[in-house]
Image (cartoon, rainbow, N blue to C red; front, side):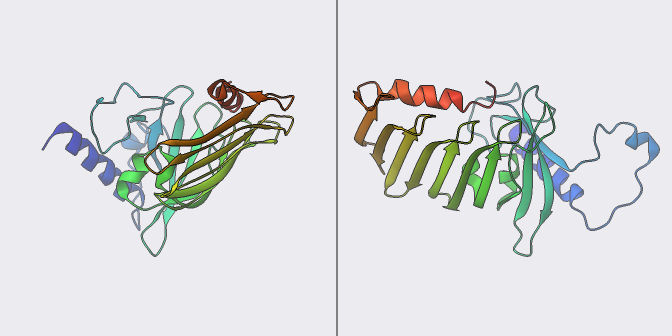
Length: 219
């Protein structure tokens, strides 16, 4: 087996251990080596971690075996009768929820920070607890949701499915900022933008980038 495969099997074994039906007392020598008693199954960074192999892997490039400063950690909350895993992500820096409890299906999904693996509805939060995004995944190919500024004002709305992608953006004033659609193949089929006075604007990318910066959880 490759090292990558061994890592994957080790991670799955950890999960099985954490969700066992019964436990025995932890020997004091082992307990003294534990950094947490939470069922933490993964840590993640904001980008590729030092443990990323920079290759095609079953483990997310953002995954880390140890805490990442200004990163996140994932707790396994349980399972349901259909075998789905209930997980929740938290900010490393203040231990506040980064997501609502959400369902994922595959064991590999426990180590994947991409939100498209989530089944059903989810809410993401800013570090102070305000809502960043709400969305619903019908399946891995269909998603709709809304994103919000830290003030609570709606910033974006989107639909992404097998027919294509539609995005709308608003300024913090509530005025329309930009709108675009792409076909299922990724071709841009429509794009329009406005400045805050309501006049047509040419640089749609700059407007969208400015809005997404204001939604950055690290800013």
